[in-house]
Length: 108
Figure: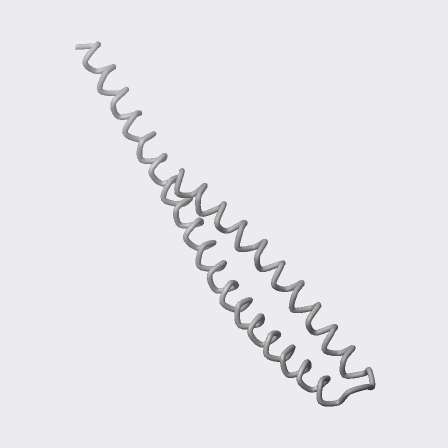
């Protein structure tokens, strides 16, 4: 259960980072679009555009990587929850068997 909680905490952190990266990417894309429309120093504008394009590409790569990690962590959490539920079911079955044996012993 502690591992599940830790994974869920990590998952929440990754989701927050994912949202932050999306916001940064959107801000970068908006600034890039604004720079493309504004007239002025072509060289400086092209340099900034190239820089922003690289940043946007890097952010997209990070987002893709985070998406993959997020999906992987979600699968792990689901598997751990399923294992936990299966273990609880096994324990309940064994408890019932123990109770039945106790009743037989007390009867004997």
